[in-house]
Image (cartoon, rainbow, N blue to C red; front, side, top):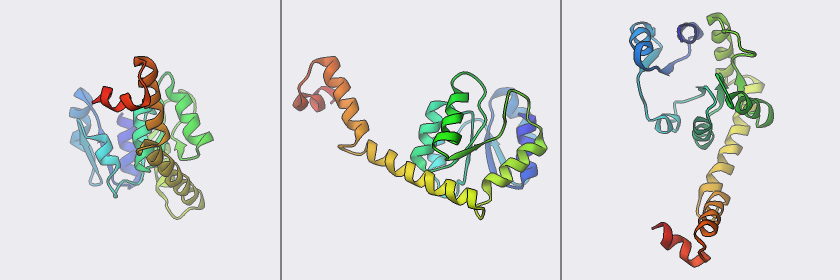
Length: 175
């Protein structure tokens, strides 16, 4: 966490960092002039704000869903388990993010600063392409959760199958 904070500060990019417990106490004392460290935030609300240009994430599935729904590219920093696979999907398959680290080594602050600066450079062709893709993925996500969208149809189908209901009874059963 100390290296991440130092790298964010060195990058010169404005940032919000969430840290809990002892990490919050330690890191909040020295977040620099371009940062804010807090113990909690409404992540989806923050990601939906127009000032957010990127999301440094551990690549948990809920964080990915919120970032995609918000149309925010992801700077991946997987820690454990399926997070490595999720990072590969974000960077390699969907092409809506970039990796901070490769392998399991600790990433030094200078590397973090360089990756963050490059990631937030909206003038580069790579960033422009990434932003176009994340807008498309956001659109697909929004359509899927709208009434009649694929996510809505799938959850209705699941409920119908589990409860043995006809189509007309699904809405009433959920109410």
